[in-house]
Length: 63
Image (cartoon, rainbow, N blue to C red; front, side, top):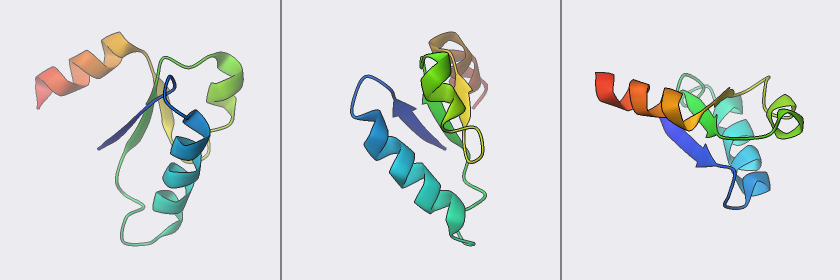
């Protein structure tokens, strides 16, 4: 799992997530963007999932 925090250079996270998704060997790694605004979230929908901080906590508590 890769988690990108929108508070720290989200454009770099988007580029990284896109590249991970494009490579066959890494395309199955789930990528999550946390606490973004709707405009930011719309930019990542094709290669990642936007979630809230609470959703991230639930995901991490299951593992």
